[in-house]
Length: 115
Image (cartoon, rainbow, N blue to C red):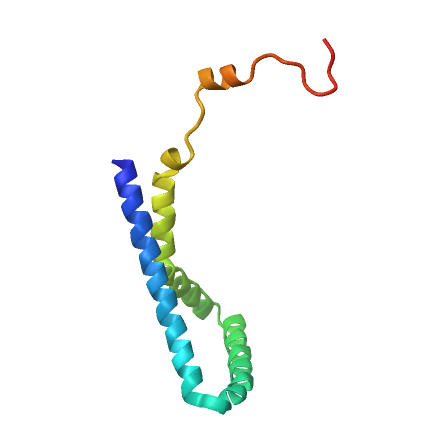
């Protein structure tokens, strides 16, 4: 049951993450295409907006926590993928049994060691 649920969560989270990245990339591409050569004028505006955002975050701790919560909520597809990977860890990385480990590592001298 863990394998089926883990696979489903991993695929679902990966698909959602891909769709979100694709949508964001398309939005940025369309914005840059609509501005044409005026894109270079956006760079100082983005820098000033970033400075204003950092100023607001340092002066108001409540808004910083709200922004952190919003960021964590926007990352939920990645959390779903990680949960799926955790459920699949036994299938993806099977641990060696004690007998197989003992059979593979017979008592032989290591490099530089004499009997």
